[in-house]
Amino acid sequence: QVQLQESGPGLLKPSETLVLTCSVSGYPVTSGYYWGWIRQSPDKRLEWIGHIYENGNTYYEPSLKNRVTISMDTSKNQFSLKVTSVTAADTAVYYCARVGFRYSSPFVDYWGQGTSLTVSS
Amino acid sequence: SSELTQDPTVSVALGQTVRITCRGDSLRGYYASWYQQKPGQAPILLIYGKNNRPSGIPDRFSGSTTGDPPSLTITGAQAEDEADYYCSSRDSSGNHLIFGGGTKLTVL
Image (cartoon, rainbow over all chains, first blue to last red):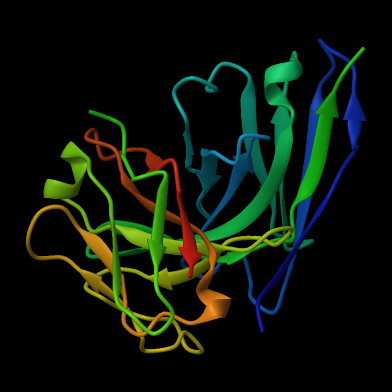
């Protein structure tokens, strides 16, 4: 059974750097899926942040690309998200997820439980 | 266009059929996936690809890929189906994922 678990700070000040880690169990991150991050703002809108493939290829939401890095640690079966210079607009619940493609169309079949981030001075 | 548009709210009488739609230019080239989210929970995948359902998803949930726009149909809505529903796909460039704004379904 595939399980994902996020870990990271719940509170940051503006301009700080967010680092979240997703620990994956029940499936190796090197076996054919993408591994990504999605966030949900307080108004409940879902926003894809980006995802990474086992070969290290990354894909990012254009509006976040300059501040976001996704990396993978295959030895720990984990992947991570780094967001620099956070602002209140980054306040959201952050989900890590497994992303697949069928007929070139994406789907997210496993989600972590989500970790809440508040950015406030 | 890099947007997917959903009706914000939809209601259905218990046991009746309801259709939730998702509009966007990119859906002419890619299939939509559909998610259900209940309060305090992560979204769960309902439909992907050509009307594929993950194991454990009841068959009252189905996806329409023909016609315009793509839609999620719940045949015989149950009280437990009251939730937020989101569609997702690729954007027109093909390189990024996008989500619809969500539809809040009320079961009367």
